[in-house]
Image: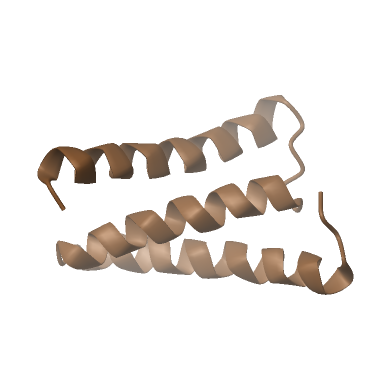
Length: 84
């Protein structure tokens, strides 16, 4: 992947995480709802993959755990049949 494209992807993933956090803080986005957990899952996964490619082990650990926790919550909602 070219460096400019990689940086664009990295910024987009970070914006996903920050948007979820900001909306949860200021707009009442449910921190246990699908939109919040989906933004965290996708954003965290992208950042984890990029961190792994660049051997940034601390950042990889952070983002991998972040992604797994969000995914666990998302899967729990799906098991209960919650879609929003």
